[in-house]
Amino acid sequence: MKIALLGYGKMGKAIEQIAVNKGHTIVLKTDSDTYTVQELAAADVAIEFSTPDSALTNIKKCGDAGVPVVVGTTAWYHQFEEAKSYTESKQGGLFTATNFSIGVNLFWKITEQASKLLSDYSEYEPSIDEIHHTQKLDAPSGTAITTAEKMLNQLGRKNEWVHHENGIGSISNELELSVRSFREVNVPGTHTVKFGNDIDSIEITHTAHSRQGFAAGALKAAEFMVNKTGIYTMNDLLNL
Image 1 (cartoon, rainbow, N blue to C red):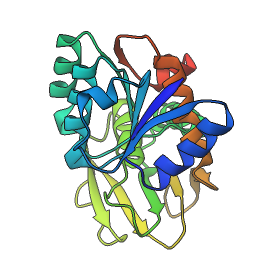
Image 2: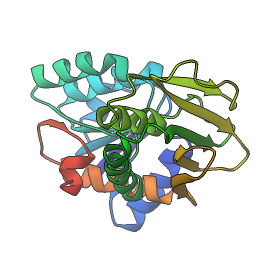
Image 3: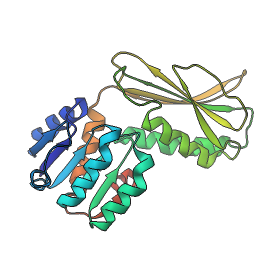
Image 4: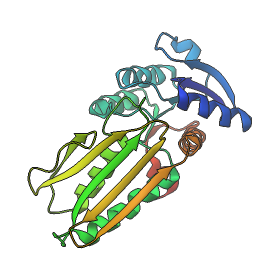
């Protein structure tokens, strides 16, 4: 499989290492959007881990090149409908995920079930804490946002999530789901869902020990996307 890496930071390098070890070839690796459609067209699939400002441009270039793209960048999803429409107009392939870790996707399923179970127990206040490395550009993380959205779908007593950076702040009314972000050195990613009160608490935590799980999942998604058209997510890959 010939791969274009659109975004060659820590994640791009981790993906490259796993891909090469599996016998795949990297035909393009770049940290800018100055590459040509012709250069991109040499790939069977693109893996996009760039910046929120570059994601849509990269997705459109993949559509122009006829190359399916796997997108791991977060904080660009306000442009998702435009990306989806453009991809479909080009009969292209788009795979999006806010987290490619198999463990995180299972964590989400567990969280959904817990939220459904505890929806009627108002004495258990739900919240989300996320911790990442200090170089992470967005807060809250895409994983935390997805977690919050999945919880809100199951919690009839909450209607929106609110963000508290560096753990500062608290919920202002009972309809809000609190999401707190913390930044610490050398933390790949930890997400904790808590249902608690003064008597006891229930916690569900996913802790990433390295970037390898994310990189391996992104590569698996890329293998899945070769020669595919349409819009896909991790649910399609994992049959969840």
